Length: 301
Image (tube, rainbow, N blue to C red):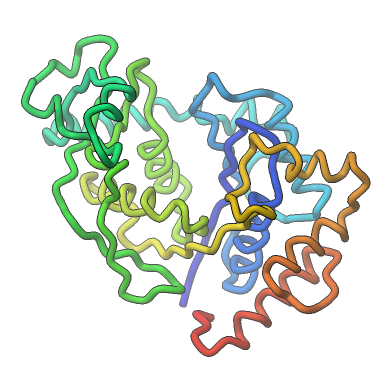
């Protein structure tokens, strides 16, 4: 199997935590195994949540843990000058214009509260589909019609996997009320521009994968058509809850300040993945993780 490029795509809305790092380690280990380049791409399109300290934490964490990347920014100034998503707004607009010309979009004035009150599963109920609100009006979301029920996902660990778009992503938003492109759109366009053909993410983002594959199919080039995915299990805390950036105790910054060194951070992640060897560096992790996959009967390697 030939894979050429993957990406680490953190969002600078908080300090990186153990779950983020585990995902980075899995991504980079598989990339090295398959001979794929690793791109660092910082998903900062949600400008209100971006803070410089969170961006700098990404570089500090990757460098401290010696997690490698081949392309993308090397420091904060490099990121700000050349790699922020604000430099790609014209590309996002071009994709929006194509979808608009193909009549794939409709305008919506529903608030999240209104949707949650009217929908048992919190999914969009299609309230504005037949209102025919002008897309040119201010203060409206642009939604993508989602008509296909099931989509095939080329997942390394789940051959011939088929999944429906989840309720929360029915007719999902691709341009927000402030006229800025939404995450699902920017992710697809970025992967197209960056020529990414291998995407590793947590199982909680399988819905986003299906939504992005659907969106990709509505664009002329269908950029994700030949993309390979892997959805790994999530790292959870002692209460079996998914780790989040709002939980400071699991942030790498907090662990370091509390006296946990690099080897200790690797040991926590190795223990969660049940890698029964001493791991104190990226090289150790990669060797142990790949060996563990090869030892399993249903290994995708």
